[in-house]
Image (cartoon, rainbow, N blue to C red):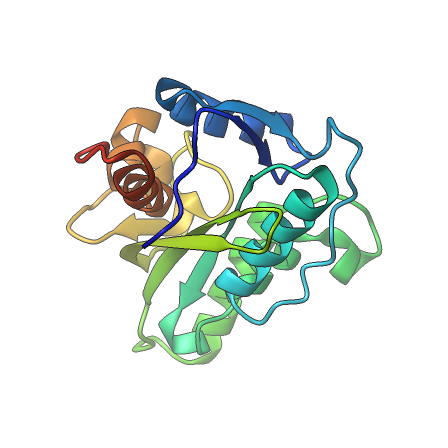
Length: 213
């Protein structure tokens, strides 16, 4: 039986205030008071895992162990079938300019172009199928954990379209749609995204609430 969160403080394993706000708002109806690992002065651990689950657990366990409180983390990315699942766990790294130009900061257009360039090398008949993955991990200080994984299936398009998304959203067309994620308004995207699916699973198991997407 999966361990349940109570009405308690939950550490969100992030230093990103935007992510804390987003996750905090999603969990507020269930009595959770969310604080960030960054606000507690906890360092970000090295994400050395080979899978999304590995990295999500690394972050959640580090936050739980250092704070003495249950912690929630997420790890997400884009997997392209024809590229053997890349960029995968390196999704954000492919946007790091320092990797390619020796400069700090992320350039998502560069990252999208890298994916498109690799597909172009495979020829016009290359499979453009792909999927986004989001893994949410909860860890308790005593080592117990729970994991929830959501996926959004789709295909890649080029050139990028839309201004309402982030990351690889402008080139991702979800299955059954003609618009990219970046052409969906946030509420539309939330109903079908990989993160929404993972949160629906978490809320259903942790709080017994169905149909949250």
